[in-house]
Image (tube, rainbow, N blue to C red):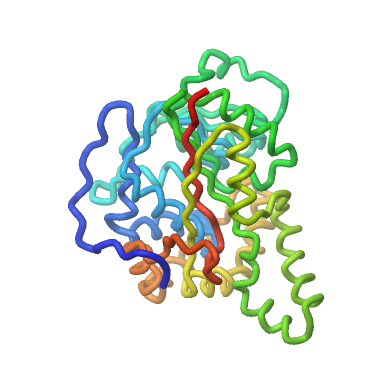
Length: 316
């Protein structure tokens, strides 16, 4: 287990103040949060996604308006803001999601429009304009890039644009892979016994598949972000149990990726009957998530697979 422990017995979530999104529900019931993710995501992706939700749950609420850079299909916000007790979302009023994939944005619109959010096709690293965002420069009190900036070739341009959209008192949340995330794979550890080249080739295959353009240690991210005028706070995310689960369920995830590349969405209805019965076998991991044991200050821990980076702007 990693990091600090958070008591399981926490008070029920309160309504978020006006202008804030309540993101604490994962901390209240990790099992039901995970169940909601499993309705749509492959198991291996759900194991990772709940890490980020649990980290944000420590914050409790996020200030709006909020810009999500690389919002994908919108499932993250539909689940993150869901009141587990009522089964309904607390709403995402003030959320603007941007992405460059029209197919993802269609799904995101279906999920988020009724909850008060909006989505736009916009490349945050490009030089083009988004008229719907022009008047909101300097207005977003929260910006989140959930495992998106590592895929952006022009990272510096993206960071410059992100800062231009942030309010002076805003905060930026980044979730990015740790540089040695693939070292957690059992297969890679076995290959290392044959030689570093075999293990490195296996790890590089995964980075190529996920198109990781930026795979940096924490100090490099800190340098890049400070150069753009931010101060940063880092945490590591991961656990041995969660990493084994993610690796074990990688093969079925490939089938889901293939299905999505053809049909534009994961095979939720086809896979759901096989995934949901797995919940009981994953309870030990979900207990770690609920306690907060998957969060650590030790960024060099061998089971850390991602960094959570919270940034605030220095005075301009």
